[in-house]
Length: 183
Image (tube, rainbow, N blue to C red; front, side):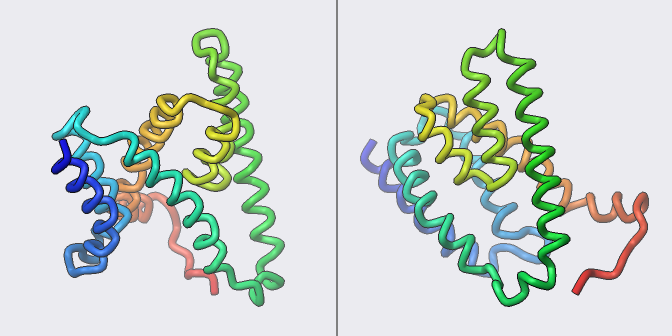
């Protein structure tokens, strides 16, 4: 048991260092590598993961992730792209709200926590996993529900990410016109 805890802690803390090596190439980014590794470990070692360690590191990572997301903001370029950025963010918030509203209404009779899960989904769609987990903890959602919503996001988001980083650009290039990148 102790060796499994140490191995899991080493892997969770050492994985960012591992992704900085030449282990990945042009199409296998650190994000895809993390998703694939997590899915493989969950499939090969079901029930062997120390959930209290994973939950604790997840909570600490939320405190670290939100400021790190803001560090990359280029405030001097904000004036140039404010209109398009606000429109994109408004569309994101609106679509996330609608999807979450319909999910909450559809599942409210079969799943009593659907209103809280819907609130977590709004956080997920507008700000990512750290927001989803923060909203879940703030609403007092049981850890199991937070883990299940996160697992559903990892599974569906991981599949979508693998499509986007593998054959998706080729397929979408056949269907959609190619535009030069915005500068």
